[in-house]
Image (cartoon, rainbow, N blue to C red; front, side, top):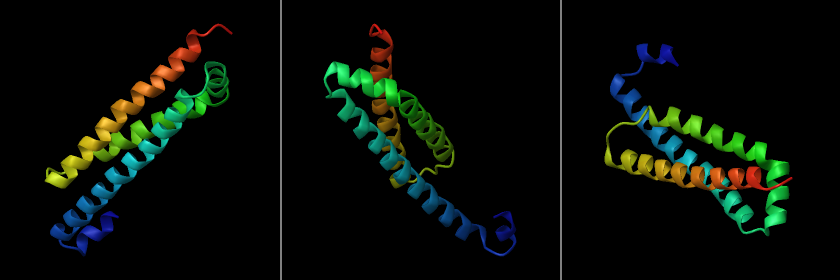
Length: 115
């Protein structure tokens, strides 16, 4: 998209970038909340069912969270300092923290259970 710099004023590019960043923050937060909801549902399963689910889907869960974390970091690197973007960034970081805590809890619990 660098070829666009020659044809579009930088103010317009900044506006597009800011809108794009806000959308990415919103999207990443929404994706993370979806992963978080899956974890919440798993956490309410009886212990044996939860252990079975983690054994079957633990790698997917870890990969999904790692992907969310990496993509969120890339999105956060693009932020500007306007109030809406900062609020979206804060929501994303809080969601990352909460989800990471749940993911770690469920994965560590399954590792500690006797096979």
